[in-house]
Length: 146
Image (cartoon, rainbow, N blue to C red; front, side, top):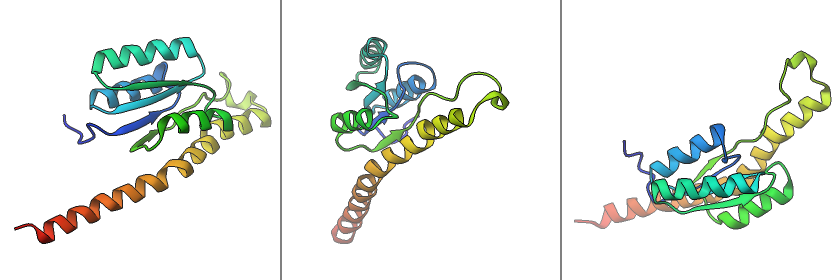
C-alpha cells in the first residue's frame, strides 16, 4: 500500500527493538528516511544497519536517552527537519500499578508524556509551516495552470 510518504524524513524513538523497531521498519518499508534513537548504542547500530539494508533507505542512529535534554538535543541535531515523529520511551517498572510509588508514576509521566511534548514543541511548528507552504504552493500552481 502506498501511504504517500516515500522520501519523507522521520524520527522514531526507542527504535532498537519492540514497538519502536516495528514503527521504524513500517516507515522504512514505505520509503521514509529515518533517524532512530535508543540507549543501547550497539543494538541501535545493528538495527539501523539491518533496516537500511532491508529497505534501502537512509537510517541514522543516535544513541542516547530521549527522556533527557541532552538525548533530545543530540537527536534533534542529527534530524534537522522532520515530517514524521514517533515518540516512544521505556515504561514504568514491570508489575502491578498498585505497587508503584509516586516517584515511579512521575518518572513514567516524565519519560512518556513530557519528553514527547518536548519533541513535539521542537518539531511540530516546522512540520505545520512546511505543510502550509506545500498547500499554498499547490493552490498557486492550480490557479495559474491551464
